[in-house]
Image (tube, rainbow, N blue to C red):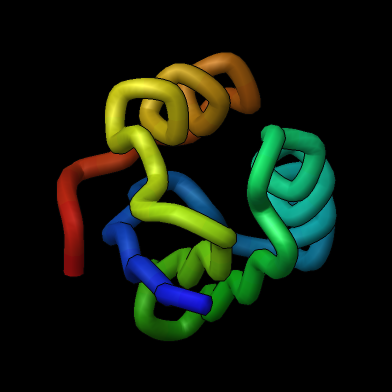
Length: 70
């Protein structure tokens, strides 16, 4: 399964990690989400290539900003 890493700004704590893991993990086709607070990266594992626009919308709705692929 492909893994795609995104740069996300505004994450600073365990709550941030839990929020994004849950929000992105609920998307269709997503099988795993790894949030690295130190690097500001979120890695999404999915059955197919993820839709960057959909990921960005979910991140934005959660209160963070997707700044691009890492």
